[in-house]
Length: 149
Image (cartoon, rainbow, N blue to C red):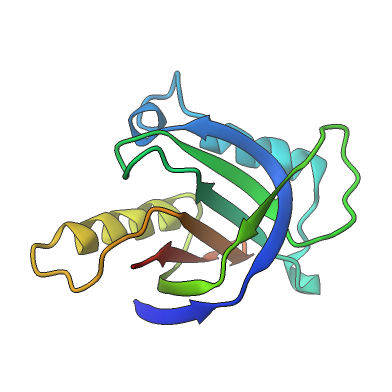
């Protein structure tokens, strides 16, 4: 984990509204299906430098409340049958957690590490719950950026 400054970036993609409680139940989960829908409509070619983002925003409160998620890309021109939504990753200070391995297990492991880090009583950082995001630079590597105060 390392603290980094991230410059603003605009993304386009597909979005849903959910919460962590729903994501633990197979009958109410939305994030996996959102990734599948995006992959069926928009091809991400990692060897050409493309990357994929999973953006968490519009937090109702903290990790227990509802939030919006957008699965998207930096590509400015994307053809799809589904209208795309836009979201801006704001510039600011983030903690970056990196994992490599088989997806989705690597990203699940990264989130478990993040929750453990922030639940530690002597954690020196505090989440801002503005915008957090996953940045997939290959089909086996993810960097998760957590906005901090």
